[in-house]
Length: 336
View 1 (tube, one colour):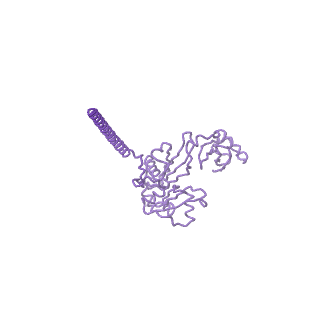
View 2: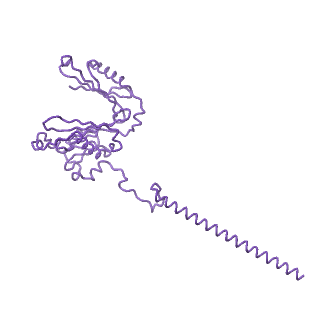
């Protein structure tokens, strides 16, 4: 009986020892697994943190760690930039009489300026006209308003004869400075032409440089004109009017053909009892975008007679504008 009890006690003791060993093994395995998980999680965290540091597109979601955008990242209007830079002195709101400001606005091309929203600022050298939203509409040297000085002897004595390349370089720098739509990247969309006066008499402007923006199909988006005076300075910049319609939107529309536009113009001239035909007139056409719409502009210029004269003793020139989508007549004018 004793032997049986001792054997039973021995078996129970062995069983407890084995269970203890299994428990210790399980604990060691669990500890090892937990430790490995901690190491893996820590590695992932470090890798993610390093990725965030190298990738500026990753934004920390913790508001306390959010970096505020720098001032350079905030879009500013041309007006804000000119006021801040103060290249030619402090830029202040123009204090000229309202009639004079309205005349200046109309001169730089702000249409219907008596009802338009625009601002006029001035520094020691230039007058700036800004359309609604801070976009610049025109820049003019103050002397063009206060004292044109076209025949000032002092100006004549200091007349600077710029070459065409020099005039274009000077004009391009002015457009890059003031015009948001003309940049190094977009300059390929523009054609540049320069016209100077081949004269020994100083005058204003001495050079007129034109930047014409066109889409691939040839639709004219805008025209910017830079006038350079006799002293070799930029005297005026006229920025035209450019809408926010994309090039793709313009090119995806359907327009009437050039021949159809000319035919419509001739029919309209006939209704006005104007003797305009392609036998006695040359015609120059262009598709031009204006306020998001595209128009055909046409210039009919009378051809000289065999004796060098004209039917009415002077050369007739007619302008007409027709909606390029509907063919609707918009306006016509006559000059000599």
